[in-house]
Image 1: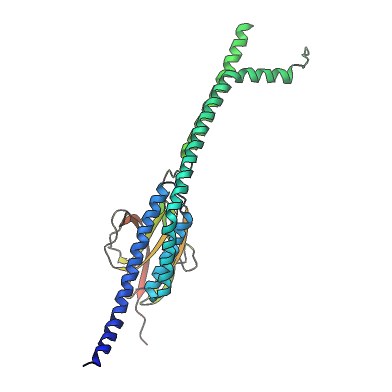
Image 2 (image 1 turned 180 degrees about the vertical axis):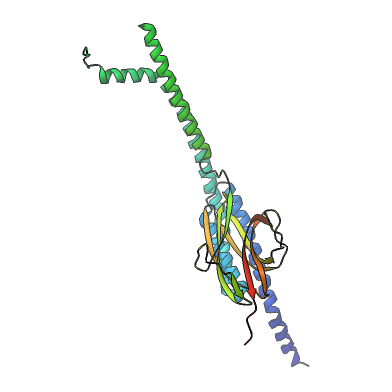
Length: 145
Length: 167
């Protein structure tokens, strides 16, 4: 009876490995989806997430590989990539917010400068135009034809 | 003479004003539309074994593996997570932009793409039931807010699948 116990334990362990593995693949997929949603939120706040999106795609391919050939190495690589992306999100958001603020400042400056230039051109444009015209052609001689 | 000078000044002012209006509208529109996607869309295409449009198989054997390529493009203005389902239907299978095909899925492929990015995925397919005028239906689904939704993009490939002849 005592001899049977280790054998039973071994059998239980061996049969439970695939389910534990498939559970971890499912967990990796859930984690990937969670990070994808966070990344999309970050993008909505103005972050440039291009490189991170490509990294998530690589992680997705590794998860698919892990699903097809039960490769624990692929799964662990995928999880490490997802972790890296997840950890980079706060910095991306910060950069995105800064970029959005800069864009607003540039937009406001462009609009203000356009309005100021329009007013200046409207009031001084004709005078400048005619003075340039006179300077260019003021010394022309008029010949009777 | 004085009146004539005034007239010329008014004409010049009008021309300057018109130029200002045109330049102003152009500047504002560029400033507001910069980086915005006016018409978001996604692309789904099926390419043949040589990644061309046109070298598709028409006749395959049961359980014979054949190669295709999926072309996916993201122009939605945001990062997208796509799942492409490959389903097997026939001429009576209903599929359109709002209704996905209600038939068995034989494979699925996934991709996460940033805006303005495309990907070509090699696909190996094997069909285990014979039939004439079968349709391989490729449907684009998206992961949106934690849900998987049909995105309304689909394409198809007509096939005859024949059983290998016994010697």
